[in-house]
Every structure is written in C-alpha cells, then in structure tokens.
Amino acid sequence: MATGCAGENAIMDKDKPNNAMPSDVPKEAQDALCAMVGFAEVTIALAAPRVMAKATRTPSREELLRALDSYIAIIVDAKRRPENDDNRPYIAAEPHVLRLRELIATWEPSKEVPDDIKAAARAALVASNATEPPEGWDNYEGEADAD
Image (cartoon, rainbow, N blue to C red; front, side, top):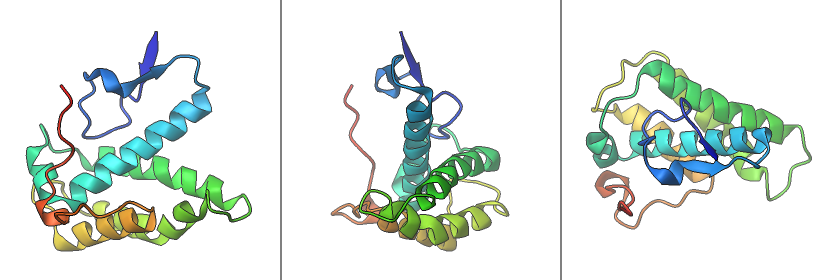
C-alpha cells in the first residue's frame, strides 16, 4: 500500500503513480518530502509561465499558501540545527520564500503570473539550489511526461 501527498500539492496530477511512496516511510519523512515537492511544483509553476499555462487548473491562493507554509516549516526546522551543507539552502531560501508568500497573500491566482511573483519564485528556487533550466524560465515547458 502506498500513500501520496494528497491535498498538499497545488498543481501535481494526483492520479499519476509516481506520486506514491511506500507506506513504511515514517510520517515525518513523508510530510517533509510532500512539503519539498509541493514547494518545487508551486515555485516552478510561478517561475515558468509555460508550466503555469499547461497546468490543468489554476491553484487557489490557499493551496499556494499551504504549499509555501509547509516549506517554511522545513526552513524553521533547518534553522534549529547548526548550519551545514544540508540545511544551508533552506536557510538561504527563507527571505525569498517569505517574500513570495507575502506577494501571493494579496494575489488572486491566475494563469498570468505577475512579474514580481515570477521574480520571487525564481529567487527562491535559486537560493534553494535549483538550477535554472538551460532554455531559461520563460521558455521552460516542464518535465516531459514519462507516461
């Protein structure tokens, strides 16, 4: 039996089998993984206009904020430990994630992402050690489906 991140991720197609994880993974680890996946999906969609355009639906403000809040909880946890290579990206991303959250809190989500939100999402990704796609965020179409 497998469990997934149902309700955590605002954009991911929950029916795809790659969204499941073994049930013997501790709940804390599942929650952390779901928070990281949700953060990546949300920020990539906000950073890459073509990814947002291809989304099957526009996530609600609440879904976006929930994904960011889950990631912020990971940042808070990372800051409790001595800084090292494992937690440095989370700590570096904090101001960018908080700025992104602030912008989203007053935005009515749509397929058209304002430039300041795109910039904040891109900054959060870079600070989190994500690499900008070779074609750039504006031309990035997302990962090819493995179906």
